Image: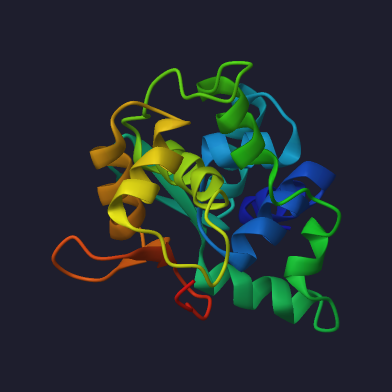
Length: 190
């Protein structure tokens, strides 16, 4: 048996690594996100990702501050040949998909719900923005003044929050200082 096959099967012989593969079959993640989703230490996830990379199952790409891990498509085909009836994403069944967002929110908010700071790292900022966007009622338009009042509950820099929420596609806005509303839901004037 070749050493390559041994490395490949050893990489698959761990439930945490199978969960990582299942998550990566859905979408790419950073190591920090995987650690939060699996409730593992970042160093443990790093160890698992190293084993998976050695087996040719995952690859990493740099994205700003993070290394983003994704499933290698050729490896995915090898796994599918071995387990044709098994959906690889099902290996991640039971993983709490919101664990990363909850961890970031807990790290960046004070007990009163206000942000201690606005995260500079994009992935963390996006988690915070998803949290803040839930303050906007679906289907309701907000004036810029009302939008600022809502955002001021979270942080004094309402302009940055507003701009980032629109930039991430979580809020939509009418041009020229017009109304704001939660993206992706039918907006009605109230």
